[in-house]
Image 1 (tube, rainbow over the protein chains, first blue to last red):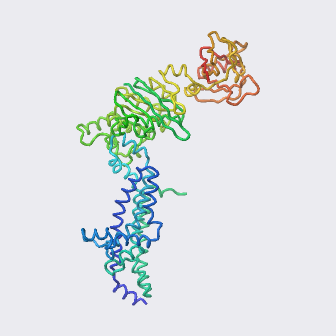
Image 2: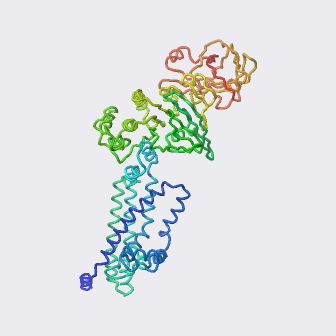
Image 3: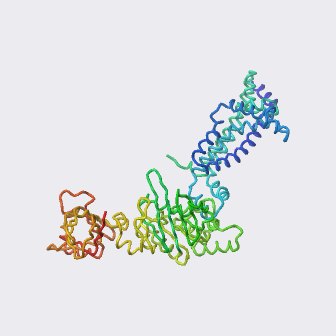
Amino acid sequence: MMETLTDILKSLDWSPLFISLKTGLVATLLCFIFGILTAGWVMGRKSGVRAVVDSILTLPMVLPPTASGFFLLLLFSKRRPLGMYMYDHFDIKVVQSWAGCVIAAFVISFPLMYRNARAAFEQVDINLIYAGRTLGMSDWKIFCKVVYPAARPGIASGTVLTFSRAIGEYGATSMLAGNIPGKTATISQRIAMVIQNGDYITAGIWVVIVMIIAFVIMLLMNLLAGRSGRSKVQW
Amino acid sequence: MALEIRLKQAYKNFQLDMDLTTGISRLGILGASGAGKSMTLKMLAGIMTPREGRVVYQDRVLLDTERKINVKPQKRKVGYMFQNYALFPSMTVEENIGAGIPKKKVGREETIREMVDRFRLKGLEKQRPPELSGGQQQRVAMARILASAPDMILLDEPFSALDVHLRDQMQRELLNQLQDYPGTVLMVSHSRDEIYRFSEEIIIMDQGRVISQGSKKAVFARPATRTAAAMTGCKNFSAVTRLDDHLIRAESWGIEIATEGRVPGDVRFIGYRAHQFIPVWGEAEGNCIPFVLDRKDQLPFEENYYIRPNRSDYQPEDVISWFVQRDLWPLISEKGLPDYLKIMEKDILYFPE
């Protein structure tokens, strides 16, 4: 038993780990930028517009990931306008490629970032924004220098959650990017595949790796919350 | 210094209908919470926009909904002091003070340093607002406003977040700092002492409307309505029946009051301040209420007596307040509680409704 384990570890294809981490990082970066900007934009809208935009942006969170994957396939297929355009002009192929991994992870984890950023912005004292305006600061400057720093703790925990969701994405990724070893095979997809082949030991190894990553993420999040002072409250 | 304000806004349970013109540069708005004071200030600053309205300051039109003019708050040059000061928590004291000065402006650093000196913030430049005391925070807020060189300054309940013992000191300091400020300063408060100390002209607001406006002496001496009188601190009110030109019956208190001057024809209520009763020992004089003690409250520098009206079926709100300052205490301890409280004709406030 021990021997087989070391043998398997020695011969293990580590590429899913790197593909997952790389996908997670890039998708999180995209979510971070667009989630914060969108949340900031939505905060400045009237409540009616807000409700509609909010529902649309949160859809991927409540839909089954495979349903999102279906829409993504429709959108990015090389036979469709957007997929065709991206392939012709930027030479980017989304379906069955690493770009597909990133886009699937981005779409699925975006709502988490967006909602956390919005919740963090809602906590910011509105008078800070008013004060900035009466002092002649532009709205963009107020956003960068006042609102974002004040919302940082909430945004940080949102980012961590986004990352954890992004590296674990399975449904939409398998549909859009497929499971190509060394290219689009993420840890989640690898686990599913080896289990189908009855290789429980390899699956177990990947599960342990995933658990270590998850634990580190949660630890990071608690440390972040601790720094902001909120977790010091003891009942 | 002419300031013209006309604001209209309707909510489900509240209507704002402000109409105000003034040439006075130290203005106080007094009103209970929910009277629309803060909303008025926010609309002056451009943070809120009324459905209908017009704001003109020194010939500059800041808002005119009819002509579709609505100057952005960034361009109004109106400084706003928030109740909680709204200092930027992520910025140092220096950065806060400089927040309202454009980055490229010549003399920016000098202005910041001058403000740091002027508001006694030396040594705190690199600290962040959460590390400062309440008084220091307020000084930073004021420095930040003055550094941005506004044409007008609005103070929204500026002292309500301070400890009582600091309040007096900060009021004096703020008054000093604003002494040379050439523009209009408008302060909003529910504290009549603060407003009285600060303003030349006082406006009393109730339920979204101006119910009284005038010099502070006039507004306090002759408030126009019962609400205005209550806001200036008048405690005792009674419904009255006018018996003839020189005689009224105070129904709530159960006494008759004779006057030398002619009683206004439309009088329906009178008010009487709690400090203005004259204690009488022995024989009753005219216009006296028999002294039947209901309750006594001891304050550090004042004794509050609550006297039962001269009728058996009185309501709790009809109980009469008599506030006695320290200088009268020896007399009371020597002669005991008085037998009557006398109402002085000159101090009676008449209200038509």
